[in-house]
Length: 330
Length: 260
Image (cartoon, rainbow over all chains, first blue to last red; front, side, top):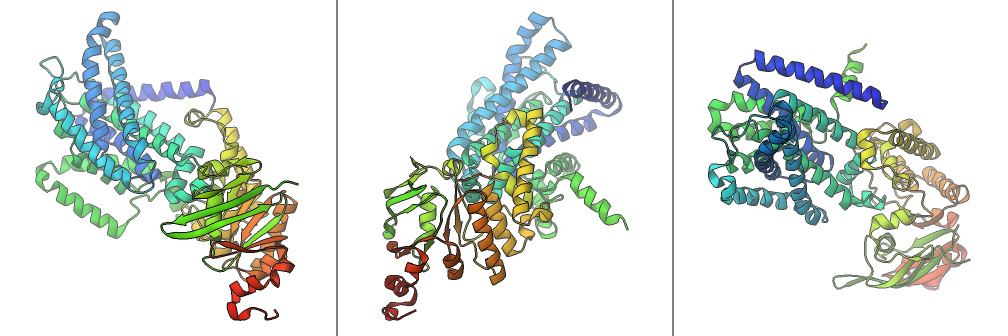
């Protein structure tokens, strides 16, 4: 596609998102709105995690830690930026949109840095070291926030105003970021880099013998994955009045893994479906809170028995549908 | 003419076991060179030393005038040494075509940003990747299977796909680790043809480890025989065939002095 056409399409998509956003805000009760926004945030988390766990085959089980880094950075920085930008641009929609997106990008950058720090040493090795290191990282980062008094320690960070963090997270912004992140990850996956990541998953020794810079690519994928979790964290933070360390417990990392296992490891569309599915079921199971982990375990066992490759396997929705259509034809 | 690949005094020790004890040989450019020896002689270990999978304790590997000892495997591959594996190591879940395309790193110039933004340079490069991959698949009679998953191919085709994938690196030197293993005599005869084609048409130098002696004797111009990590003989096939040490290594001590 040529650039003018791309900008045209982007403008139309943004306009539609804005329109739908207005509709959602006017037509849906707040409770349902929240589920719709959480679904979008889940999609970002799942698509990002799938890049490293599914496509590259390097298991991270501490992604809640990167989400926390993004959430706290965006929340804290947003509070610092907001008055300055409001003073410079005049208070209003433009200033808050700019504040929000700069805060999100800063959250992504900090999460990416954390990802680089965790990934660079552990991804030099072959095997499951990443799982162990990310597990440790997730716990450490939560304990750090639990003790950081300028971020509210265990009570959580609620910003400078008594009303808590500003509710920047709207339908428009969540789904704009969903589209950007899904597109970036998709374009990356269907390229020489993506092929190389899959090759690393399939056989790292052979990939190396074929001149693949395995360590560099693994670290790149992991850093990007951490950055997307950071964006999701920033969006999550501004959906609530505040964030607490316990929002990013180990269970949160498990939630993300369940999303991509349901959808099928290695499939972007599978991650999208898994993300939405989890947002909806989590709400439906609200009354069964204490049984949640039991139900998840049962669900995972059922998947392993009935469809171990997940809903879509490592394929994309498009190719699965095309095959079904061919089969349906006489 | 100076050698394309030259090993001198290579030693590799695993724990207390000396897998290779001072092996050296020269491979002339444009030749088909056979590395043979009984099971466990250290042939694959030598391949792993040449390609950087193992770092030798002592000795040197010089390729194309450059000391590549201890380089990372990906760097050695980029420099021009491609290989296949004894126990086929394809990217099983990927398609036949993608298996080949993965090895295109030498012609990969566009950046991650090009891929994300789908620039014109990216599209052009993807077409070039695909064109080259198809060309190689054509040579090995696999083009009709380009969209099939690699794991669905029969054994012999998987071996040929591994060679096609290695060639995507546009190497100068190709190391084949038991390419005829598991092939029937017809497939093995075809393989001989293909190896000669690689040398004659693609101007490659080929080093092969092989147990199928008819393939070895038919295609190799020079042989190097190792046993228990040591060189026991080298020379043209006609000499090796009757070399007493070689016969002893393959057939046991009793065979010494027995006419073949």
